[in-house]
Length: 301
Image (cartoon, rainbow, N blue to C red; front, side, top):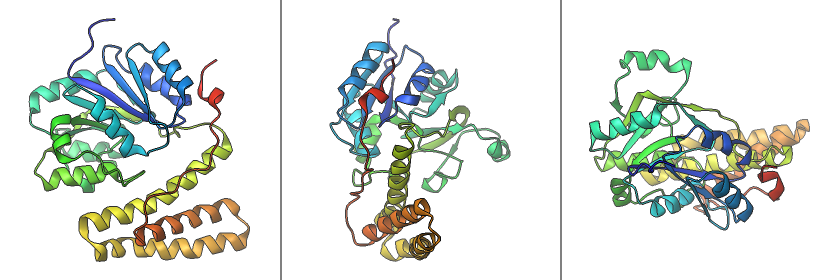
């Protein structure tokens, strides 16, 4: 193997991600070091990755700590100047890493660079921006302008800022980090000509029961994290204003779908209502998917 790139380390957080992680890794130049933080104690998964990908180091958290906390473990482990955070369902275009190296030298002083997700619906927006780099704030995240599924972090600046908020288990952690960058005059840029594919498939087992448990967890945490983020950054009244309609809607829909006999929809809105109520009551982000990990399912033959 050629000498590993010393500037950028790839950081990927996984949880039951076997069915897509190999595809993600196959698109990454083998001259880059990769740190995978697996949110479990799956030693067989760690062995499989490190045996088959010589540039990969897999860290086991021991339990499901959530996205932000697992990324923080990876960030503290990495010794390079920059970390490229990827979701396991992201595919890097051929020239992305070389383009990012150029942007590092060009911009020098930045906290976060955000490659563009390939999405034809946004072509006109970026065309109006002349496909030039532009500064973004937290309002851009989740609106196809920028996404937290691929983020290049300047580690010194991010460590000084305090890393990801570990009270957030899932959702809004990248938005919160970018909001703190904005508040501290640290620069965050969208770089439209640097594009990645976000496949959008789930990063866990293909088992139908498991998928539904993960879906329930996502709905619970989406509601919990939204209220927490707004309360933390803008105050209680603003947080209520942004989420009260969702509380009322989920309350009525969970009973509506119960009466209609639609079990899955009933449970989804029950979780949405519960997540928001728990956040209102200042309870921690405690919900975890009720799944049994089949180790053999998480490995190749």
